[in-house]
Image 1 (cartoon, helix red, strand yellow):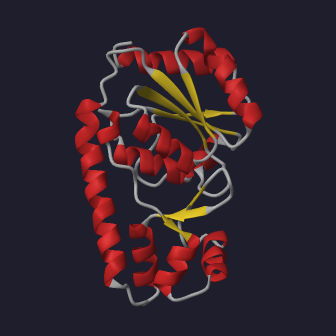
Image 2 (tube, helix red, strand yellow; image 1 turned 180 degrees about the vertical axis):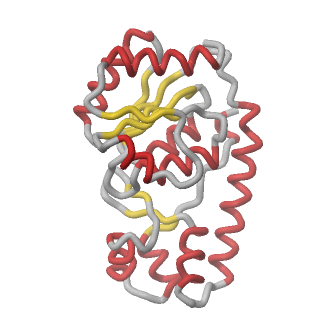
Length: 216
């Protein structure tokens, strides 16, 4: 059933530049300046959701070509199918935990902290990779998400997760002050925010509580 779940639609920076009628460098500048939302792959390439590009273009009074609207429409249809597939995200088998952090050392430390739970542990090093893992692995029952990551920050990744998988628990880990971290989330809050450095036992027990609430 996993192969029937459509993948999100993304635009490369050159494709977005062509649709906007600007150079690739201009697109990258907009992204680096925080004006245009994007994902960043492990290889350093920028990927843009078509709906984000349309919103940016409309806000800046730019002409939105019909082909871009068609691409965005297809992406929205895929998202609806993904939402409908929530009933198919059965975790009747052994659930998995997804650890999202751009720092490989922190990913390893988090995995060690969660190892006593005895569950499969998957890794993602950025927001794009996290969404890909979630789309392809219906057994993921909990996400441990770093807040400060290059490319797409944890708060934006959280919103993507919540929009696509509304019932999936997310624990955010951050080195920021708790009040400062909470202020980054507008409206919808994570299920739990844990500040670093944390006690491994605290993260493990918190994760265990969410899994227990899901029946595991």
